[in-house]
Amino acid sequence: MASQAAQALEKAIRALGGMWDTRRSVTALRDGGLGDGDQRAQEKRARQALRDLAEAHVIVKTDPDSATYRLATEL
Image (tube, rainbow, N blue to C red; front, side):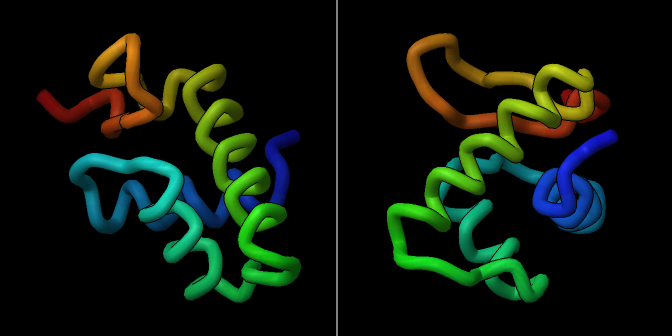
């Protein structure tokens, strides 16, 4: 079962599309009511949610050397 953060982030990614990195993910999670903790904790939560979604094949990395993702169904 996906974490609450991964579920919220997936909803935002599907609604908004485009490129996603840690910063944008933190903002989306904060807007979704999951912004508790200091900046470091929020970034850690966002990175884990991104990894979870990539593992579930919802998103894919756009560059192997960067933590930037896009929706798997986008070209």
